[in-house]
Amino acid sequence: MIEAEAGRAYPGGARHGRVVHSLGRQIVTGELAPGDPLPVEERLVAELGVGRSAVREGVKVLAGKGLLESRTSAGTRIRPRESWSLLDPDVLGWRFEPGPRPEDVRLLADLRVALEPGAARVAAERADAAGIRGIDEALAALYATADDPDAFIEADLAFHRAVFAASGNDLLLHAYEMISIALRSVRHVHTRVVSHNKETLPGHERVALAIRRHHHRKAEEAMREVVEVARADAERTAMDAKDAHD
Image (tube, rainbow, N blue to C red; front, top):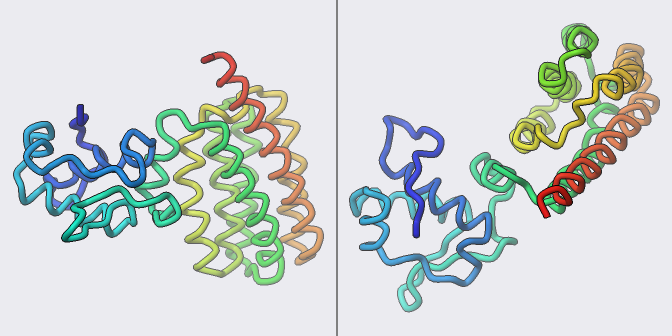
């Protein structure tokens, strides 16, 4: 049965948003598999409680995200995963909510390891006074929230964003904004042990110090250590959650 849900808001409360988010989530989670035909329009109209025009507009949006393709002879079908716009905000949200697979958590952690040390290096090379001030303020927030796991997670996301912002590279910052959608969605796999969070503070401080001093190699090395620890934590927590569920 197609699940009717509002999903994220679309401009003007557009009815096609219901179609986009219901079908999009089913495609990304595998309920509708690549190659499967899309349910016929009459069924979508009845089960989602929208008109034909909303269904058609929703299908166009999903096609734009690479999830659907329409052919005159074959109708509308689910496209293979490699065709999806994987960094599209909606696709990322559907992939990591409500319960990401351990494999997806690993892939996200791998992406951070591949991207963030380089961003820290560029930040050390390019950061101006405002960028460095933003990192220092974010670091102070990390220390201030160390005893509150939920607030610490938000402060940690803000610290890493500040590093990307300090790079002065809008492409890098956009990449992090997309990644942060998934990172927020996997909050439950972040470590909530206060003592462990406090142990990560010196690593973040080394990143900030290296960027402040424009030591690009040290900034890259320090950030690599930080995200490697985060990767190990996320993978361990995700596997523990999976074992508990099984």
